[in-house]
Image (tube, rainbow, N blue to C red; front, side, top):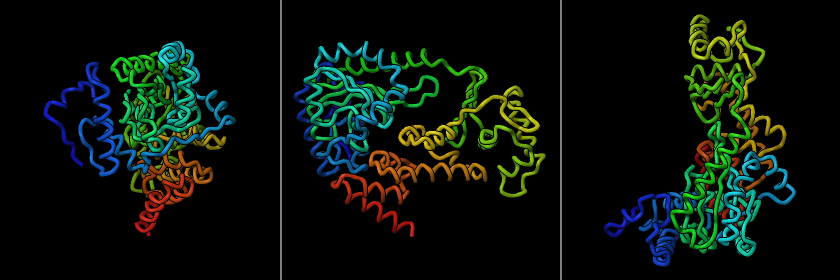
Length: 428
């Protein structure tokens, strides 16, 4: 799909994340974008002046089978919303967000909104009349505004690209949302860097100005600073191990971040699962399928690993961590065991060491994936199912696609059923 552009148009927007420059006529741009949106939704062709960030988002929305005439779905009812957001990490940042944005939103007839990493709106506050208008398009607390459900929009797209972004009028994928303009910035855990959600300012075309994007970005930085103050970095003796969705695990301990080799990653995952420790012979069984690797070779690998980490962190006889380990895969398993499926999926960054063939890693990876998949199918939540189905690890997962087709709104079912039939034929 090509893009056609009048000469000189490329240079008009110096920042691709800003919808309009200060001297752009919003009325003129609105007409151009409505035409471009119509061309894309009818012919699948992108035309200028569609910004690259918007065009890529439109393509993702189309691949997710989002209907341009659809609406966001309310996924968290009042009974679920209160406890969920009370326990959410972003609850601690809300006082500073309200302090910085509350008066601006109310006085300007805008809304401030904060969503979680799945795009579900946890707080929507601001001008009362604007809230009532926004409610007609389901821009309400508990509604899901991820791209896979609501198409291109500032909070959903900011999470998808992990960048502050502004979305103007007809840049929105859903036609009912095209009378609005919004700017949003992702919010991160200040210590792990994980996306926790996004902060958003939503209103009319007056927000179509570079200042609104800079403002919401500054609010996000202030909120992250507040989270860092309220949740100091873990003490020196704590150990954090991140191994989901990556072949080379990351270890954080004593103020150090250590990227591990693939073999060292497998060793530490095995030891994290056995806090009591493992002997050399036991580690051989955990890590190798056959006897091609000798105990001498493994001992040499462990010696290198101890030099890298330090003997005060990795003990021997048996090999074990000297401090409790907070492993991301154990965190997902704990959330699943407590029934917190949304939180488990939010913490799941992908399969455990996906390239590893170490027997213990393969077993744990399959067990965790199978438990997540079974819980998703049993819950039947279309938004959570879509998160898995449209992820790199779920794109060929036939049972999840079948469950998504059964749970999705009627208008989306034919395309989802077609995808499930294609996968079924390919896997026979």
